[in-house]
Image (cartoon, rainbow, N blue to C red):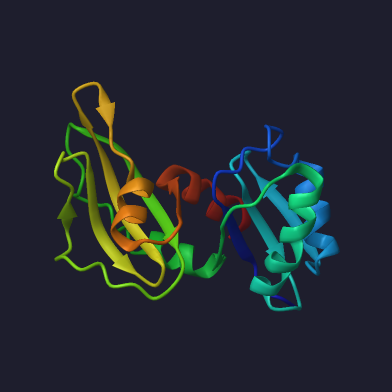
Length: 179
């Protein structure tokens, strides 16, 4: 039996321009070698199971997504167990305050050094990274006046690689649904 894997697509909104609809995304992943594919919400988060190497499934699906709907962006593959283990540690306990807007998981590939002590806060004070390891940065988005921070933009700028963010609420619901 294969291990449940989560694919986090960057800048995918199911049914919108340059994004597949749910059936197209799931069918494309199955055609690429996933034994099952179940989209979660509409933000490009998908649970797959595959006997083949999951990264290869996602790579094989990419040209088909491009030809079907024009989608051509990054995808981040993580074992469901990694997300469960992070949540089991309750890493956000005691980190929020009255200005906290969201707790976040930001995914990226390539072994990267953050290059600054953790926890780290950006210059505007609206993004705080509290943990950084194994292709996942845990963070807090804070309100700064009328705007909120963007951990994806902060990490992409700092690391020079694509990234994609989900809220901790999404990750909790995902683990509850499939864990």
